[in-house]
Image (cartoon, rainbow, N blue to C red; front, side):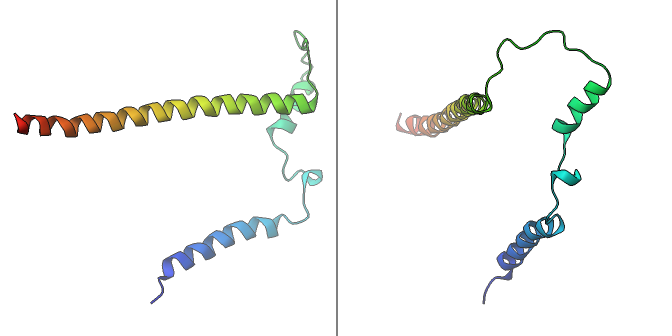
Length: 108
């Protein structure tokens, strides 16, 4: 007998993926469907008459800006991975020591 739970879950996942694609088919940013705070924030700030206090010393090209963002994300991922690995190793070592201590007491 085939288990029906995975099949039902697969149908639900497919429906969740297909529904938004069918609902927003052909609509885009020109209709304002997918505009977010990146678009609305600068427009609101400029409408208040705000003038910046200073200007950037260097404005990178879009390619360099993307590269810097990627490098920043990579460094962050390395730090998070190191910390998680360190604490995972500490936990495994602690468990190993806890398992070894009762064995030593039995031998004595």
